[in-house]
Amino acid sequence: MKSNKKRGGFALVLALALLSLVFLLVVSLVNLVSSDLSLADARKERILAQAHARMGMRIALGEIQKHLGPDMRISATADLLDERIESGVSYQARNFPAGISSSSASSSVGIDLNEDGRIDPLPFGQRHWTGVWKHRGRDRGVDDNKLGAKPLPENIDTGDSLSEYPMVSSEFDPHPAIEISWLVSGNEGFEKKLYFGNNPNQLMEFVEIPDGNVWDTGQPDNGRSFLNGGVYGSDENAWEDYSIALLNSPLKGSEVLPVYNHPLFELPDPKDSSDVEWLLVSPVLEKDYDFSSFELGDSSTWTSALKAEPVKVRKTRIEKENTEEGKYGAYAYWIGDEGVKSKASVQNPYKETFSPEPEGERDLEQIAKDNLTVATEPNLSFAYGSGSSGNSPNSGFGVEW
Image (cartoon, rainbow, N blue to C red; front, side, top):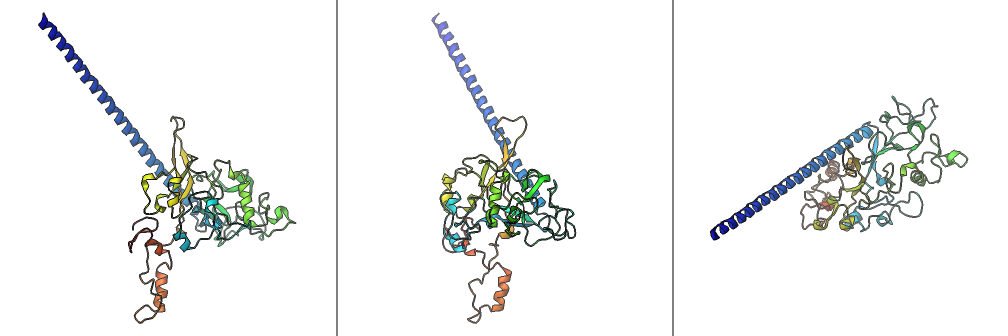
């Protein structure tokens, strides 16, 4: 009888052991399935992010073709609206201020374009935006002395409305006035047009600096009326008049985000808005910057280590049907202007040999030829010795060539 009880107790222990083994197996399988599901979600998110990036790149290429396709279009950076003037020496020697507001980036050296007694910088992060300009369209059925470019050989871009198609113009103008676009994300698409008016068919004025018309208080809009008027004429200084017109227009949008992204409209800090993003931050940090504390969304972790100004742009959301509320994809892009860059890869090996004496050094004719062959002064000295020792070819932006 005693032996039977012992065998019954062993069966209970064996059953509990098998149950524990089964439970452990179930828990392991649940963890494995959960891990696979997490990896699948991560792969899905990665594939979606790559797809969004590719789409953003293709849209950016489309915007370049749309706005800069015609040969007579002119591009330049928003730096021409910035009143600061910085020499190459001071640019290399200093870091950017810890703050990233417009006021903290101000300078005492510059050209007071709007004559307000101070040097006004553009909002931080928007100085390197690329803009596109064209000549003034010509009104239908007007006299030859009407403001606007002559249609040679043909100009199908009229001056009284905006077409839904790209504004084609076939005449080159060495001093174009009309702003067509700023090539950053958020401005893409045919519905995003830069103009003053209620709609493209009720165009009041183009966006431009109204220095082409002489200030005349005896004329409507003080002589600053180009098309239908009602926009310019608030200030005799053309630059200030231009700024006032933009800042008081519907293009300015709300205090959160503008309707159209213009360099004069300051975007919020990405730390405060999920619709704005920093670009090109890492390449312009000091070489010895400690990336262990780097957070792209928190500018306070890297602004003190900047050697140049990064780019701030608005993101474009991609929302799909049947997705969770508040969940969306996005892309952001900035199109740089190659026309304002210097070739840092081409160096003059005889740069320091300027004198034709002593015998054996280059003569003046050879110096002239060399200066035509390579960039004369592309700040190549910035590529040596900044954050490195000796002649190691480390750029001041922390990039090793």
